[in-house]
Length: 415
Ligand code: DSN
Image (cartoon, rainbow, N blue to C red; front, side, top):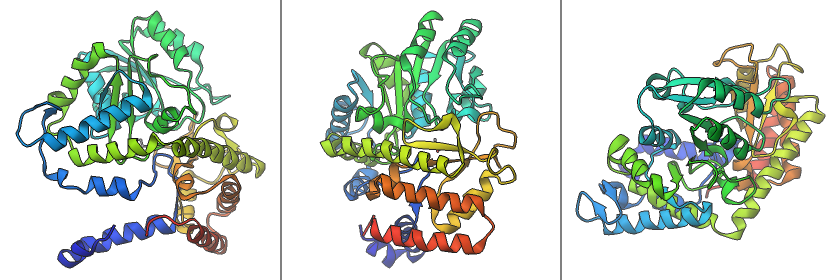
């Protein structure tokens, strides 16, 4: 994509846009929730649909002139149904958090009870953190992973549900490296007559490609984002059985959103179309293989991984056993200096703070999009280790940075 017109009319913004393209080209994006969409998705997102209001749903809009908005939304819905096998899909949520809000508003009353995973153990703000609307409007209790194993303790979760008697149990996580047993969580929901919301924001693409168990048809509601392990641009999605279709649609519009961002819905349609290709299945498999290779090599260097490894697209490194005096923020800053962009993250049993935690989270969706295979990911693990071991050594950071430059030149991204 060219920014020629913006450059002519608004050089300050053009500088920032070109700067960001350069940054993405020249660094390794390892924030586990980020990826790189195709030029086709970006074109669709920057289309004239950004001008269009289309409150309502295809065929039932409040304004005129919606025929092409209808086409795009129907394409996104049909492709999503094919990808995930859901009966009903709403593609209008602006984000994964908005998708979760749509479910809560659709089936809960203020004061109802949510049981979800603690944020510091890998959960998400929108699952009921006190700083988020979900924690303010609903009564929330949280389950944890087993601090010894790093795995969800399904029995403890079940017991907790029987004690708390929630109205909804939330599964699906932001920093959990293991396969989620949605059936086990559904058993707890059945036992307590609770709804089950599976938030697959991080693993949406892995589920679509069949490399992670699907909660569709198991949980009552499945929410996701469309830009992490699937490359359909920023946004959210809700899937459910037909019986909940009206509740969900009304909760999204008019319940919590106004006009849908139709240009983003167009991006979703294009990205979902791409994900229906056999190449996407290979991409998703490679993303997981790459995360496993990355994690195994980090372990060979003596780093400690929460749960001992990964089944999905991310690894969570607990720095405390190997580098007790080094914080996640130290490592995040030094790695960014070297051109590897990931994030500091809390770990189960966190002993520091959420702002300066003891772990780092690293994901492979972006590297895999660039064409990295397992050997290249092992080398990235070597580079990460060098910086973890000496985050304040400028020579080490400079040497790693030189190698990152070579890798980003070899595995190109945007023209
Ligand atoms: N910010 C996302 C993540 O990094 O996991 C979740 O919303």
